[in-house]
Image (cartoon, rainbow, N blue to C red; front, side, top):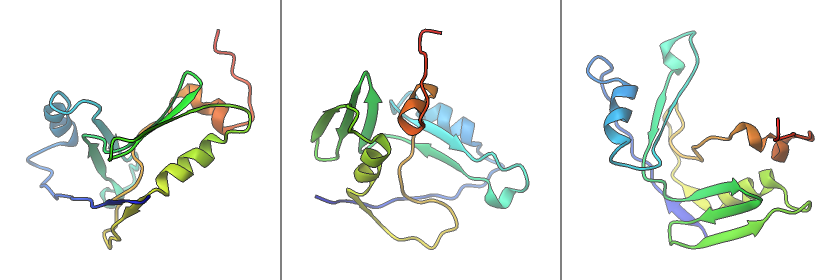
Length: 132
């Protein structure tokens, strides 16, 4: 099943609001919100901020299990084994969504979130000693 997504965006004058100020007003009202900002210090033409609120779907890797939650409230849990590819599961998760095309010069759809240090073991061929 493909889930259809439509992204809304609003352009604001930077002299009246800041991304951090807006995020601080939204974070208490919307749990699991995040603020993502570009780190390009070479010019303002490529500097964008994304404030993400109310996730419509999630994929989480935690305690040896991948949990996928979808807009129709379907939840799929997969125990991680040697045969499971986490990057492959993320790719498969993203492919379950159909998004609007956009001519804007910034990302208007996609997977927004973060990965932690502990996730390195799922993306690289390294051993992480979590006891240190």
